[in-house]
Amino acid sequence: RPRVLSGIQPTAGSFHLGNYLGAVRQWVALQEAHDAFYCVVDLHAITVEQDPKTLRQNTRVSAAQLLALGIDPDRATLFVQSHVPEHAQLGWVMQCMTGFGEASRMTQFKDKSARQEQSVGVGLFTYPILQAADILLYQAHYVPVGEDQRQHLELTRDLATRFNSRYGKTFRLPEAYIVKDTAKIFDLQDPTSKMSKSVPGGVVELLEDPKRSAKKIRSAVTDTGREIVFDVENKPGVSNLLSIYSALTDRTVESLVQDYDGKGYGDLKKDLGEVFTEWVTPVQERVKTYLDDVASLDKILARGAERAREVASGTLRRTYEKIGFVLPE
Ligand code: ATP
Ligand code: MG
Image 1 (cartoon, helix red, strand yellow):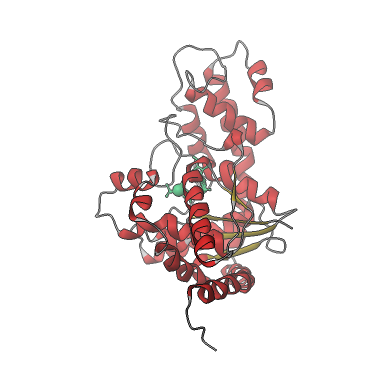
Image 2 (tube, protein in one colour):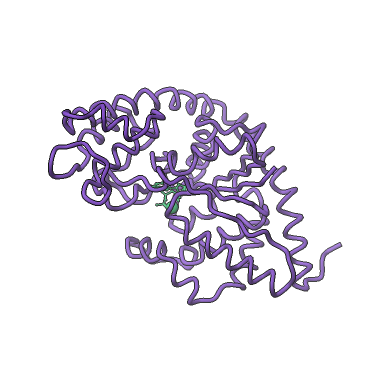
């Protein structure tokens, strides 16, 4: 079975709709026919300052959400990144393979560092390199992610290629698995930028009170005119709402546009608020159930880490050998 690997940060406790529609939904679908590895990337979370208690809580909340959204720990390998030390170890090797200029071209670093109020750490700069290590450790065929990760995946492929040509074939070149319709969910208050955990604004959080979400949806920025049509260029706000609606109901955008012919933005927003509430309510209940029994949750994660380490340690060992390290007996 083809291998897939993906990760999500525990930076904010709650995932948002972009995380679900752009990434986690694909994770759930892929676990059926793939050998899937999914991790909560706490090493990435500390690229910006985290409160220790909050980080610990958010890591469990993230794992609980993945389970509640449909990740099946008997089918997929679900784990916490820091439980598998090989990530940090291969991360160092990959840093030594990366050019400074190459790392400087990562646009997400430019965006995130520009927004940072505190001083910007080197970890935020090198985080795409650690991400490359995350993927290469598992020899993943596919990496299901949102559109914002495409450039990082290119870097991963470049590093794998470079390593392979310098030391001999070691890593598989992974491919991005990006589902076009939901590759980028936009902020409801600013439909030209992506919905993001680290940018407060029009972010629909899965764990907030659904009434609050419905209100955010009702007050989403829409566009001039009144017609409900899908036109990303001229009507980014309405188009974003239609994409979300379509994804949550498995109805096509065309059929929605037909249904809303003659109706107003207000109707669309009100209905979408209801659709979201109906979808998210049972998800929230399941999250709560997982968090009510932290011991069992931690056991699931320990089991996942053990399985992940079996694969990761093999790759790291082969890598160390190729580089010329004396392997410990
Ligand atoms: P941050 O702003 O802190 O980077 P984030 O919102 O981007 O947080 P991540 O944990 O970095 O969340 O990303 C998890 C997954 O969600 C990634 O695969 C990413 O591509 C995807 N994703 C994030 N935001 C969106 C979005 N707006 N639309 C579609 N996919 C998204
Ligand atoms: Mg991100």
